[in-house]
Structure formats: structure tokens, C-alpha cells
Image 1: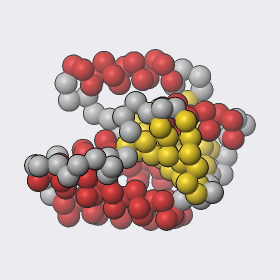
Image 2: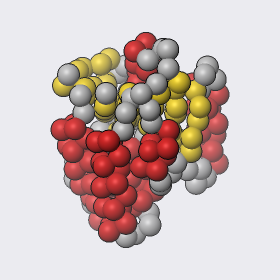
Image 3: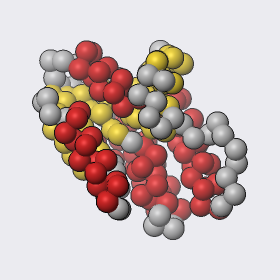
Length: 173
């Protein structure tokens, strides 16, 4: 089963996605694939807080800031539930490399793995396409690529959830 949780920053999407795995896949191994990189002190503190707060109860943590497809491929299985948090951070990591062709290759490999993977996979991502069009080219590229990514994943997913203020709105499934 493939699920996609979308929402704004601090909307509660990660907590709800984690709860979904705990409730629907309590009898299986849980794998948390984190995509964040600690580029500064503030992000380092956020990552440490997130690790302490949410993953102390039986999650195996895998750090995959770029090679997300490989991480899913090596950990997916019928008795495993995977939570990927967060796709927009993963996208940012690739866009900062300033070579869109590498991003497209990584994205396509990710899609292929998702189509083939067994088990329960829950993806978390920031919905950023509901605001104004950004002024900078990198920001516009980020909004464009994340919008395409979300549309593609929503089409593939069995269940899509939009989270606002900690409340789920099931869009599909």
C-alpha cells in the first residue's frame, strides 16, 4: 500500500503519518527514512529533536538525503512499513546540486521503486503550491518540481491525505 501525506509546514502531517503506520502496521517492522540534511545549527537542532521525539519506540532510522530509491529498495518488504519524511527536503537536496537532469534521474528511479516495492509505504511532503508564485528562479523551480512530484505520486498512491492544523482530509482512498 502506498500513501501520501501532504500539508503545510507544522501542519501535523508527520505525526499523523507516523500514527497511521503504528495503527495499521503495528505487527511489522517500522523503518523511518529521513531525508533532511543538517546545513546549519538550527536544522541540526530540528533533526535531533525530531529523532528524540518521534523515533524512540521501535523505528529503524535510515538517513537518505539523496539516494531515496536505493533506501526503499533495500528495506521494503511485505512485513515492513516504511515512512519517508520528507519529499520536499529530498527534492531540495537535489535542486541544490544545480543539475536538473540528475534530479529527474533520481525521481524516475524513485517512481520505479515505488511501483515495485512490497509492503506499506507512507510518504510525507510539504504542499507548497497554494501560495504566490515565487520571485526567484530556484524557488519557482522548486514549486514546479514539487507540484509535478505530488501529482505523479497522488496518481500512484492508494491513499492521499491533506493535513491542515492536525486534521486529516482524505483526498483519495
